[in-house]
Amino acid sequence: MIENKQYRIKRSEISPDNSLIDVVKQVVDKNAIRWYISQITSDYMMIEATLYSEEFPEMGESVEGQYYPGKTVVVNIVPTGIGCSIGGYAGDATPTANLLASTVDYLITNPNTVNASNFINLKNNVVYAEGHSIDLFCQGAVNFHLPYANNVGLIIEKSEDWKIEILFNVINAVRAIYGVNILEPVITDEPIYSRCIQNEVGAFVGTVDNPNVLFNAGQELIKKGANAIAITTNVQDLPSEMYAQHFRGECPNPVGGVEAIMSHLMMKKFQIPVAHGPLLNIKDLDLAHNIVDARGAGEMASASGLACILVGLQKAPQIKVKPNTRIADVINLNNLLAIVMPATSLGGVPILQAEKYNIPVIAVRENHTILDVSQSQLQLSNVIEVHSYAEATGIILALKNGIHLESLSRPFMTLRP
Image 1 (cartoon, rainbow, N blue to C red):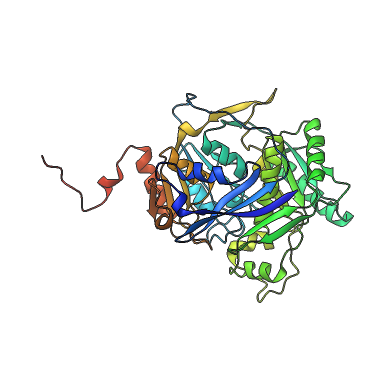
Image 2 (cartoon, rainbow, N blue to C red):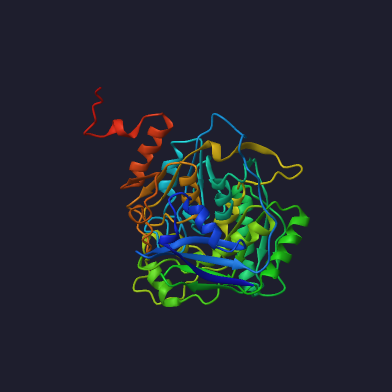
């Protein structure tokens, strides 16, 4: 069973002798699929967590002492379901991701950053990685093994024939145009029933009524040779008025939270790359204009949300090397130069792990969210606040080239005996 739960940590219980990530881990159930700090007051921190009733095998070991020198890596995250003004719609953070990628050997980013239904535009050095695998990477628990190509399996939720026909046209287009190896899809015999849920702070999370249907389909695909899994479902309980507001640029994407829950759940279960896309994009909405907010136009212009995840999974990183998998490169936490994040959503696993390991976090103020989990609230020791992604790019170049940031600003302190 999947449960969404809130935990409160009294600020008086947080000792400066302990890292914040360790404090949260002591409170949050170890079976959490996903968690983040959603709210901070003068008295407490609220943790939004999604739990699953069964335990999964432990994943990963420490990468301490494992070095792959000569490669610089930046992690760039645009969280889903919290109304990011850049990247909270349909792939509209792609230009910023590709700009950041131009500064390093590899830019790791989550699917929400670049997914835009029929549209996806990734530089060759952009690593498309599911959120839980990014958490593990930033914990120093896994290497990212970058494949030449994955064998992509696809789970399609039981649906009417006409919907299935639309999907197969999308599948065949991706095979013909992008050269993705897509195995014969599994169409489930029962509905999966993925559902939207809005939490206390207004962000979207989600649940899945029949997770065993997902697990059984995933197992079948792995037996066929899949080492990456795409999922497409009919998302339930979608609030149509909020979805219309989303297309007006006024509301977080209601679908994003449940998509993250499904991909995290399946990744924890099978330990391979996973991504979710809506089976059909909702068009029957009460819209003031048929031409929607430009940031969400990729979704409105597409029949399904499937194509982008099939393309993204083609070269998604493996956290465990399977037999006969051809690996092009390997990277891990020891290559990580910095993490880039919206400035008001600094409460996730990667950010708190970065403080523990003294890795710079570049907080972008221009990317607004509905949260207020910022540096002024958290007082982390490793945060560099910038206005824009263009400024973040300059900071990364300085870090990469060993230029101390103090030397780039004025006034500049003079040292004297």
